[in-house]
Image (cartoon, rainbow, N blue to C red; front, side, top):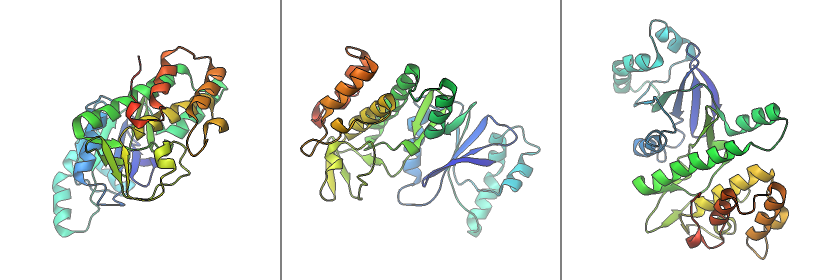
Length: 289
């Protein structure tokens, strides 16, 4: 297998022999964050929502050197059977403490790439820096579906979005992979105990201007972050007039600027953004109608 993309939390591999087989593994950089339970929650958020099809989850995977794994695959029909065959070896190595443990999601797809790679490829194809409308809608649909699953079924939610953590599958499905950004939701609130970089492009105002930690915020910070991401993709950059005004975002200016560029007044997309980018977190909604 070869690594096609990496973050500080996950590695994504492609099988050299069967190019439609991909594997996502956690990096073990922070065992307190990437516990088996948290991995299961992320796994469920992208499989039970059908954002990834034909998938399998393997615990305690041994991370072989590429040549060793290729040898193992020589006589196997697929990577699924190869990893199944490694269970006894994994358990043996676990007892000897001389291996690297990991958890893997193995799935089939025609193409898997980072969001940045996806954007650059489509910009070249279309000779334009604007993403096509159908891609914008697919991003909204995919990320909204994952966010809704986490809230309704796991009582957890991402508190912000980072473009480097978005993975694109077959040009139509967009998934968010992060332990660090996944927080527990209690009584509609999220506690954030770690420092937040104010350089992030998609921070809601209540995080952008937080003065100290821990921070207690409404879980709907993620709605604002998603709105900023979509806004950014449509106008290429968040307008300066919509950045900061008297210590908070001037959302109306941002929406007006985008409306003048895209002519979307009275469209579903316009009102979706208006609901996401409300200054009052309690009044934000993730709704596209």
